[in-house]
Length: 124
Image 1 (spheres, rainbow, N blue to C red):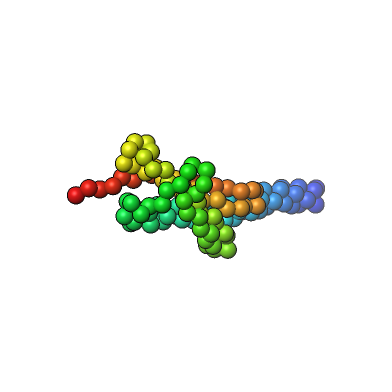
Image 2: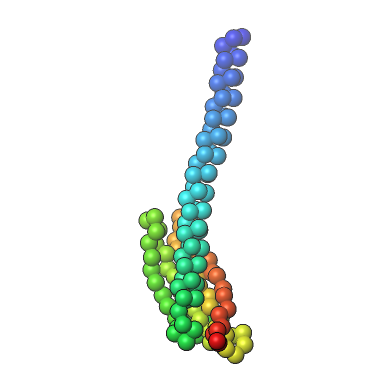
């Protein structure tokens, strides 16, 4: 009887250890994916800030299908593609609608994040 109780306890311990191990592996993967996503958002914000620092007239403009600026950056071993789209007189005259899209490849497929902003010339 003691042998059966010991075997039953070992089986329960094995099942519990397997479940906890699976949770640890998932947590480690999610942490890596979160780092990649955070880096993508940081790159998009940095691109918007670079454009904000430029004189309004010097911000490059393009069509909605062709990026005004394209860059490839590597952070933490991941390669990110940063595309900047800038539409002049959108949504109204005297404004530029800027969309920065950052894309990268994960094991689950290609991911992309976009940030939008509207800039206008400051007249003094």
